[in-house]
Structures are given as C-alpha cells and as structure tokens.
Length: 512
Image (cartoon, one colour):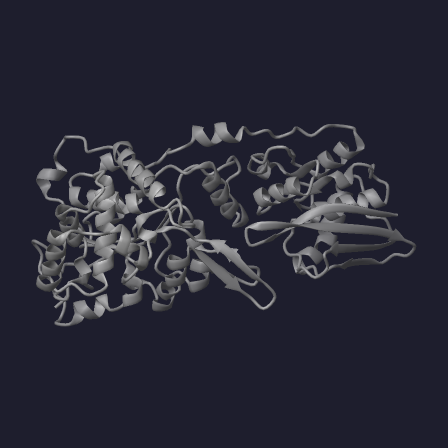
C-alpha cells in the first residue's frame, strides 16, 4: 500500500513542502531515499522505539520511503513524526483517509514524546499557501504557528495523541491566536527606558537623531561613561514595528530556533549584542545548512557592537555589504540563500587601549601613536557607513545624585515617529528607501539643499576642524534628519552646526 504524508524543509526563511511517500511490499528491508542526512536516516531507530513503547510497531515488510523532491537535501530530526505516521497509515494501523490533508512535523523521543522543531512559522505560512487543511506539530511550537490565519493548527505532546486523532478516537485541541490582539498587547513593552539615564543629554539627543533618520552611530568614551546603558535603550525610542515587520522578524527567529515556548509574535524591535570573539559565519549567517546570523536576527532592530576595535578585522569587514544592501547572501556549493538584514548599527569603543584619552580627570598612559593605531583597527569604509560619531564623557556626581526624572522613552519616540512620517512621505516614490540614512549621493543634491550661509558654515567647519571629505555627505544627511525633527522644510545653519558636532572621529587631529 502507498501512502503520502507531508512535511516541510526550510530554505533561507521560507519553507518548501516535502512529500513523504511510504510504500509497503513483500520482504523485510527498510529503505529511506530522497537525499536524507544522517539525522533523518537515524529516524528509523527513534520511530521504532517510540512506536514499541506506545503499543505499535514497524511491520516486518519491505518498506520504501521516498522524500520528494529528491534533489533537495533533507536535514534534521523534524521528519520523525511525518515518517512514523506514514508507516502507520501504509500498514493500516491508523486510518489513512485524512493523513494527506495535514502537514505533520515533529521530532520523536524514544517514549513517543514530541520535541520542538525550528521554523514552525514559515512552515505554517507555506502550508496555508499550498491549501492544506491543517498543521500538526509539537505543543511547544503551536502558538508560533497559530498566528497564521485560515489554517488549523494542532499541538500534540505525544505520538499517541496524533494516532488517536487520525483514528477518530480523540481530538487534538486546536491552537487559536488572535494575531492582531497579540501584536498590540505586547507592542513597545521594553525592559529599558531613557528615564533611567542620569545626565548625558547630548548623547540622548544624538540617539534620538539616529533613531529618527535610521543613522548608524558610534559612541566613543572611557569605561563606565554609560555607552552600553544608552545603546540598550535605543530600541525603546525607535518607531513601533508594523504587523508586516513583526511577521518578518518572527520568521527569522523561528528559523533560527530562538522562539520560546509561549511566544507567538515578536512585537518589539530586536536588540542583538554579540561578543567581540564572534566568528564571521556567526555574524552574517551560514554553515553547511545555512542559518541566519546575528545581523539577520537584528533585522528591523539594533545590532550593538561593544568594544568595536576588539572585533576581528575580517568580522567587521563582512558588515560592509549588508549595511549597504540591507540583506545578506550566503552562497554554498549546492544552494544560495538570502536573509534580510535591515538593522541600525550601534557601536561603542574606548578612545584608546587604556580608555582615558580625552578624559576630563584621568591621564591617558598610552604611548605616542598608540591611539591612532588603535583607531586604525576600524577601516575607513566601515566608518564611512557610520553617520553619527559622538564622544561620551563620564557623568559628574551632581547629575548622578539629581532626583529629577529624565524624559521618558515614550515622549522621545513620539518625536521620532513624526520625523519618520515626514521621511516616508518624502521617499514614497523611491522603492526601498524609507529614511534619510538610505539616501543616495544623487538624491542628496536635491533633498539636502542648503543656503549660502549654510555653505559658508560648512566650508569653515571642514577647514578649521580638519574634517575629512567623507564627512560632507554624512553631515548633510544628519542635518536633514535634525530639520525633520524640527519640522522644518529647509536645512538651517543651526541644523548644520549640530550635525557637524556629531563627527568626532573625522577630525584629523583626533588621536594625535
């Protein structure tokens, strides 16, 4: 008897339906074909033990299992349940009538329990697209898959639950999630708030500008000045995720297996902070079975690189293309996958190896030339993609002991959202551009026009402060964002002056 059951394989952040064909014939052999990897081949032993421990068995016949399409490599243990149900249906131990109406996925433990899988959300999206009636999967992943409407999602804790469901002896509880209600209930529930920060008003202002224009930012300051604390609060002032962004972000985290049991939809912007010992592959994604890296997990959120010069040079250089294209392409011999990577880069660093260059109170003990050598660990092309460079100085005691409450993130976010709305309107005819930071040099000439006074100010600043040529475009982009926050149609001299202030590392006297 031939029976077909259906599973799914993840390629990038999308799923492709896998047909598991089980054929019973005379004989006593077991064949599993269709390009399975070692984990899939080992399913035979797991399935046999799970069925025996629940009163069922693999029949002593010739069993041929084909996983189609046969040219796509099947990886992982999530096909255990798909194959087991196929074997039971083909041997008529369960009723095969409705087996083909469902996508069935799950890893089996030896007692028949179901263990969680990766990529439940993209699998559910593909199942609905292919017209399946429902999706049967481990209970731990049910809420994640149930955010897909018009698809019956059933979470099971044991293979026995699934067997009884197909035999009609018992029903599985359907998981139902109100996606919009879930999304809005958790919107902007951030752990950190700018009201916790004492002092540092100029840095808060710089981060507000960065959030309003989507600008990448680098914070330079001595240890303990509050760089990390400020960076962690940046997501709380970014515009709220819309439903499309939330689904896209959840898909990536689902594929990477980062969703918790009770999570259904990610509704706050992600904040990723990898350690400086991270490898190239862990940052951009990859592996024999390509997985999303940190830059994709930070999609629609913030990627924070603390102690920037301590990262390996090769790791920092692989950031250049994703920062420009807002996606990362991972190429392997047998396939190429694309992961979205539209994130805000926030970096923090000490000004020198000892950490006290330019410190108001402590003396820098670094030898001559060491500061410049330390800064040279960060390449010019990477710095070229960072619009805002700002010095962070330690907070004096009088500000630390101040009992007044600082401005809350909610109030700052309101201003940021208004500035972003202005930009959305401005770039509505430019595909893929939503914020000032994404402007091309050609657009800069028409959108960021400045008057004669502004030209003179910019010219004098570049000469007196020894600003490099790369600073020119960055200053204009940041000035445009400052003008948007000010609800000003034109870029005024005070907007330019503030933008010039945020180019600390471009001064040729820095580090000398």
